[in-house]
Length: 356
Image (cartoon, rainbow, N blue to C red):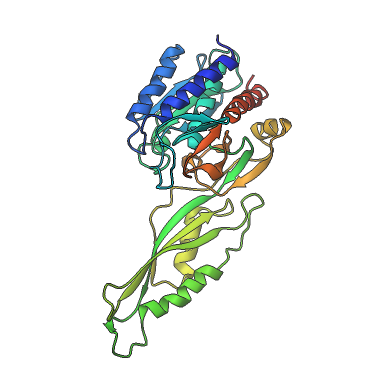
């Protein structure tokens, strides 16, 4: 078996190949082929479902609990701020530049090395399943959510996202609402005491000021933000309605259904309708052995405001990975080479304390 150092060098080369292969959400066919080749080159049996590539450890035992290792190989589209070619893997001053390097290629290749390290070991306390998933960035129908009825039942998960290898023990959920404020349509030259745009002023103020009662120790308050507003088509016509989009980041004290029920009951909108409620908050107890193992390695715990594939899992899950979330989706995205090296070491050390 190759050493972790040898595998790490191979993982960095795989990440360079992933960067240089377009893999926008729903278009991950070619990066899935690269991941398949990685498994073939390391003599590991795997399966592919859509663009999700997955495998289980060699001595899988249905009597044991199962730990999922997951990260994604799709990317967002590059923004206009790039000064470097987003599809060219370039190393400068210890930084590996390229689209998807930080979110979440570094996490994915680090977990692939971790999986290989434990793959053939006997008498593990947990089974291992790894899923290199698609459509995370778009929360699409053919991502990790589509795999949960296909892969073995999962008891706990590590989701690879850039956390500076600190322990995200909770993650906020998301509900997006389409809301409407109504009024009376009229010519702008005539009096109108029911102007929908003026009616929206108080509604916007309500969204700005409202606070949900329950705060979380790790995730803080529910955050509600009006992110879009649309009304009117002509300068001389008062529109019949104003349409709002409201983004709600949900802490672990509420279910998404709770948030829907509260807003539909008390918000001053004429209508407020959720686009979906499947992206729930997620968490893992600090007392869980995975978290305690990480703490023993000097890693800090925190609550994450950003969304990941944790949101589609029903089991307890920990978000952990090399890279920095603040670099995700930025122009000239990068990850430090030494972050990948450190990430692999911490993943292995953490699991050695739990599954061996």
